[in-house]
Image (cartoon, rainbow, N blue to C red; front, side, top):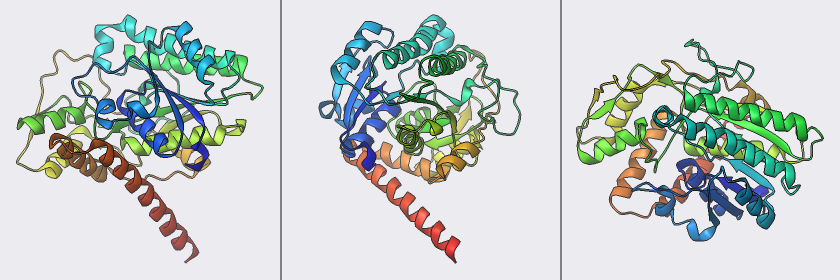
Length: 360
């Protein structure tokens, strides 16, 4: 993380779940963080609980407002941009597809246009989703060269966001002035996610209320991974491609092994304790959801030497600990710091162990 010390980094969507964790990691690394977001309208917000608002440049605005974005780039001259701002909920995209496409497609256009206009930017990462691929419901992982064709409005808008990014990169950044990549992340989980219609927030809410967890599709297969795991790869991509065009591209970001949603919830119930259980929910009013979604992450493993640090059991253990501390009124900022430090230490230990085994 020494690379980020003192650098100016813009995060769009910094008040969201992933954005807040990313801002926290960068703050701890001595980075000048500029956050741009519509703000959080949730009753519970990790951004507010984390207490980072006063430690960054916090700007509230709509990603669809190009003129306001230009002012942000003009005023703060970011060197690195992490584009996370999005309408991220599949169910919401069915209710309001126009807003979803406006936010996810034109929001990306606006970010890339500002990158084109302001030469201060050297490295850009657009975070999309594993759902950008044409889903054939097969049992092996999608690779980065598979066709893009998300099924429903959210996934399709993210496929379009990928195409917008590639278009700008080919049309305006071929000279290497700025390097641009996209990260197609699997299902990111962790403490402090309060989103609707997501399995882990649903688990935490039900457990807190002493209710049975309702699971829409226990047989669906997903690439679940801890939020810190995904963010560390984002940071590595943006760092490595800074001034080095060889590293830019599109990257899958996911775990070594996928589990079914039912398996995930079983692990959660065991870890949480207190006799909680789950039941299958009524899915009559739910739109299309893929049954099987896996990612082939050979590319990031080969190029960056990445290896998964926390398995799904460790992820769930951390989420349960985080949530219980939160509900007890504990120090969320300190807990985030602890998890980040623990992850980095576990990574160091894993690297040392593997090096020792290699030499032996």
